[in-house]
Image 1: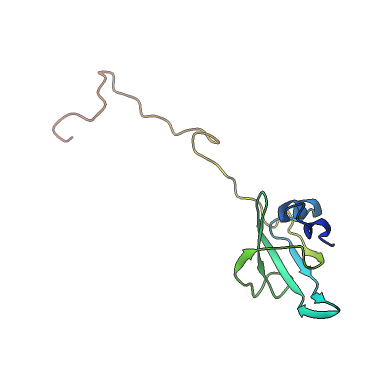
Image 2: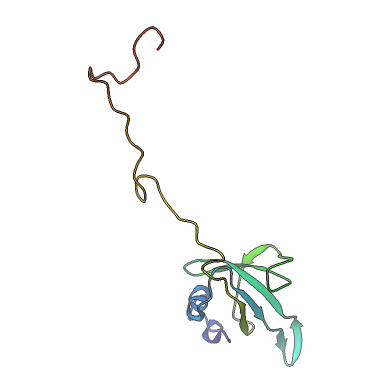
Length: 126
């Protein structure tokens, strides 16, 4: 799949990835980069690690299951044609719930005040 108007700068890498239906964990194969019919960079395989509002992060990998991964970096889709090799299934990598106590989940109960209105323990062992 060619990145088309990514080369002209009219859309972001993130919008391109979303349009293709690629998700975090997708493994893509990019063809070699050539100039005047001469290869200047070999083919590349990457695993998407994050998709932001504009940018996409990923790691180079040597196999379809992500072995031999390199360092995470920003991905560009404008210099080569990309093909989806593997996409994660919902069962394989369920998303971790993002919760904020008290907002997404009930807040922990507040301890009850004693009947006499004290807020701190009283007595000889306090």
